[in-house]
Length: 432
Ligand SMILES: Cc1cc2nc3c(=O)[nH]c(=O)nc-3n(C[C@H](O)[C@H](O)[C@H](O)COP(=O)(O)OP(=O)(O)OC[C@H]3O[C@@H](n4cnc5c(N)ncnc54)[C@H](O)[C@@H]3O)c2cc1C
Image 1 (cartoon, rainbow, N blue to C red):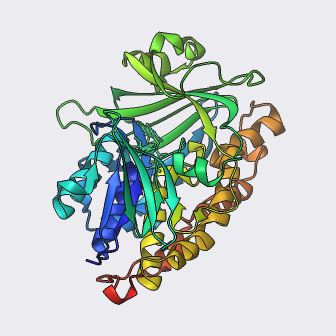
Image 2 (image 1 turned 180 degrees about the horizontal axis):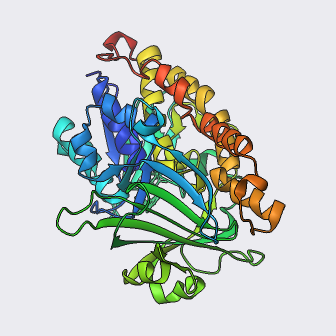
């Protein structure tokens, strides 16, 4: 280990993936996480093959991931008439060398934490420690200001500071004091889980509805051998008038399902009963679909942003969590190349900030769900045969374009060398 400690603000998926990567390449780090206790919060997220590849390289096994989710086989968009708009295979079935996993966000987060503590010891994550800002020191080091849950204040000094503190990042706010407020485009999501029989391939991600109102659902657990039921993650989404801004006090709260189920009361087919699916859950998480305008750089000297702090994005592309993992690995690769230095942060920023900011804007334009906007523009959402509305080649080209931009185009990902070569380490001589 070098004695060049890296400070990480935030112990979410991005912060913990960074700590695991730094431990792997022999760089000492400490994670300051605001909450007093890590709990398995959230519902489903997708880990795209580019992120699963990195997890395998970090020593996670298929059994680890099967314990918190299941491999996805299909991504499908279905109109309100029940007809397919688009479907494609996902993960191994699509020809990727690595699977795509649909996982429970909270359980996956706990898995990252368990692995990190097993490998680096319990002191690596300091809970109840909020990072409120930073100071760049004349000797090139950086100090993070820490506020403990009991109000005690202190400072931690290290070679570099990684801001992985999510969409409301304090590090980003200091780095970009004039950034505009959070951007809300009008969509509201209610997310929950229910037990149900998985449809189609048994592991399908389904987006059902229109560009202004839809249900997204997919299983996030292998079916129970006795009952055949899986935990189904669902997101009920409605677009509203956002002229007056978001009225609720917070951005994330639990609400009873009776608050929103009426929007979907007629969504009943012989293959799916949406009100029944929603009704099986008592509560759901309500959150507006928000992001932030991209910033021109994620770096300020020895400080850099990562994950949602760097690129908060609409979940339309199912790649926010995956990109946080990829960020961590690219940052690690740049440290292997340049040492624990500002040059490593600059190389990471140069590689990712521009392209991933474009993905943020693409997701604002509905990401892969943009096909629903095209259906609306061309036929008002009513169609018998989707081929008459958007020819198959045009649909396929649209999806290929999205995957290439988000970094999981099949051929290039399969052919790419590992982000961090096996056994690569930061040498002590590379320390500043
Ligand atoms: C509680 C929670 C539930 C979520 N549920 C879902 C979901 O169901 N589906 C989905 O698609 N996405 C969900 N997300 C978002 C998703 O996890 C992220 O988009 C993605 O994983 C990127 O992760 P991140 O680590 O960059 O950010 P985050 O996951 O937001 O993690 C940031 C971490 O930093 C901590 N933190 C914040 N401010 C500070 C500070 N000043 N100092 C120290 N620590 C700080 C937070 O407590 C959090 O642990 C959720 C996020 C959270 C925090």
